[in-house]
Image (tube, rainbow, N blue to C red):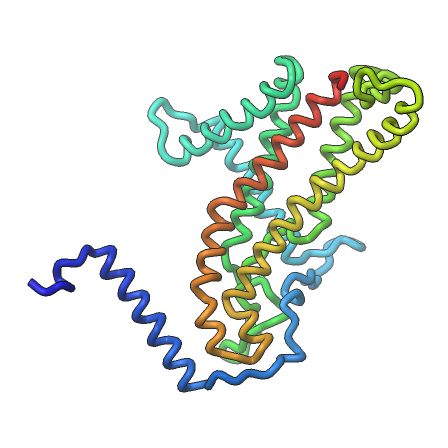
Length: 302
């Protein structure tokens, strides 16, 4: 029996992929050469600009960002509604995933708040987690939404396929973070009163001259939470999408070097898998648990 025949199916597939990759490099090198030129007209960030498709009422515009938000909102509402009316004693895969998300968000609230407060804020934290998760996940599904770069199909200018997440636009994470910021400050003031809430921001034991230094820092730190929540979600998603774009062909277009696109394609695939499998869920989890921590911390004294 030959050595190839004795190989496992997985190894044969891997060797086949490697062979196609090497042959692809040879074909691209022969067909297009290995000399490039800088593409002055191409800008990878153009694909992330929001182009108005049409206006609804007055200043309200519809674009791909709005489309992705509506899809994420529909999936969030649909998932919660389905979970409320279709739970079965023998769960399938979807119900198992929903129950896992329920248990996770329940722990987020109960471990950071008392029982009464957890019951009140659980719907908010769970909705934040699911909405951001769906927003991130659908951001890795290529859809024909890039109206900046179109291709000709039987005389029609069809939008190019693109992976795009609504939270790569800083306005979306900012609004979500602003909602959390208002919520936990409101909860702190409602529970402790305005003066008591301000006092709670100061670590216990700080008095005298140190108070004049620490109190302004704590106030600034409170506002920095708004920025950290926003930037963490926005920067991670945008950087990940840009890396995927660059490694999957954008860098080759920018440098006018076709063989580079084939050379970096495996890196783009690996980054895509890493982002879609890990980062999408991780960023949703971090945002939701920080919201729960900030809400629970607003009613306690440091």
